[in-house]
Image (cartoon, rainbow, N blue to C red; front, side, top):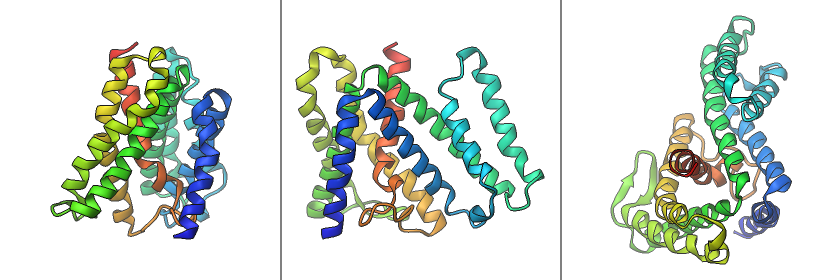
Length: 256
């Protein structure tokens, strides 16, 4: 427990300024999370340590570059990247077709996440709301589930999650999401903030289950041991990443 608490404090200290300030600090934090996520996404592959170094490096570079490709070239860029990742098994024995699909899934999912980070850079204050709503939901779901949990949500994927915790998480996430937002309410869209506080707790639970399904498939408890007492980076940001995608959907569809 002591290790978990110390690690949690260090995580907060590392993340608090980039989230609060935005700009370059947030960009650096996003790149660090992206790099760690790549390692943890690929690590369960049995052949991963046999791959030439250029495979994961090129995957990371392609994912980062996807955000900066001009809109008119995006379609061609994505096709070329998919063909490259799909075709590598032809030339590399240690990189199987199964590995190719795992790499493609990382490219698609995390390219979209990184592009949504670009949207958040335009007004990083929304990220503060998202963070509070997400982790407020996690905290509330843990508390209500532990105290009142009787009905399991999906024991096949996550045996500890209950419907009582889910409802408690929605309520706590909605309330906690508003707490910091009142300090900068005049700088954001109230409608968008309301939708984030309402939907982020729901999507957070869904995101946690999606990432839990990956761990169940590979029979692993945590994505890695990079964060002592907490598992890996993806174990800590799974719900947050899904809510970053939610922000991208809401912003690009209704607020641009």
